[in-house]
Length: 403
Image 1 (cartoon, rainbow, N blue to C red):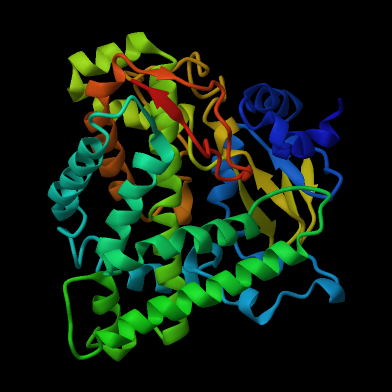
Image 2: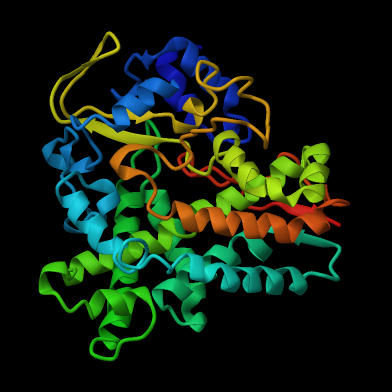
C-alpha cells in the first residue's frame, strides 16, 4: 500500500469499523500526504490541521474548488449554509443565526433546554424499561437530538419523522470519497434540501406577525431589517441547524455507548462518579468523534509544511486523526475520561468552530447519564456493529444491545 491510496482506503466502507491504523499511517506519512488519485491532499497531524483551520487563505466554500465546465454546480448547490462560506459572509450569517440561539442576545436558550432534555431522555429510557434488547440508535440516540432540535426550531412533533429521509440524502451528498460519480447523489441531495428548506420556510412564514417561542419564529419576526435573514438564507440556516443539530449528536451518543460497553471498568467508574461525565464526553469527542474529516480549498497557491497546495485544489483535514496525534496527546489510543488539557478537534477549530457545541455537550451528558444505570449488565449483540456508509460523519447505523 502506498500513501497515494490513503484517502481511498480511509473512505472504503470495509475500514469504517476501525480506521485508526490508517490514521496512524496518515500521520507517519505526513504532515502533508502527496496528492491522492483525485488530486486531493491529506493532512492528519494535530498542529498542522489547527494551523490550516485558522488560515484565511483556506476556504470552506466548495465553489472555490477547480471545476470543469461539465461540473458546474447546480443552482441549488450554489445556495450554501454559513458552515460552507467564508468571512465576511460567513460571519454575517453566523451572527444572525446566533441571535435567537445563544449569547449575547439569547444567553439562556440552550441552558433552558436542560430540563426538557432530561424529560425526553427519561421518556425514552422508560419506553424500553421492560425490553431485553434495544437498538441504541433507533430507540434512543436518534430520537433524542432530533426531538430537541425540532423543539428549538418549532417543528411540530407530528412532522419530526419526515426529517430522517431528507437528512440521510443531504448528508450522503456531502460525503468525502474517491473514484466515484457523485452526480446522482448530489442531485438527490439538492432536491432533498429544496424540499426541507421549503417546508421550514413555510413554517416560519406561518408565524410571521404571530410570534411563538422558537427559533423559526425569532428569525421571521426579527424587527430590524438589517438583522433579518432573507428567505433563502433563513431556509439554508434552518436546514443547517436541523441537520447539524442532530446528525453529529446521534454519532456522539452512539459512539459513547459503544466505547463504554467495550470498557466495563470505565463504565463502572462513571457509574460510581457521575461527576466525571462532562470530562468523559470531552474524551469521547477526542477518542471517537462524530466528525472525521473536513475539506478546505486554497484561495491562492499556499506553501505549507514543505508542500504547495495549488489554488482551487482540495485539502482533506483528518480531524479524527489529529485528535489521536501522539505529538499532541499522551497515550492517544487510550480512552481516559480524566484526561487533562483535552483540546480535541471534535468540534473543529477556528472561525467554523461548531455552532451547536454547547447543546451537543448537554445532550450527550444527559443521554449517557440516563443510560448508564442500564448499561452495567448490558452486552453488545454485534461487535463491531454495522456502520453508516458515510466516512465523514462516522458512527454505527445500528447498535443492538442486550440487557
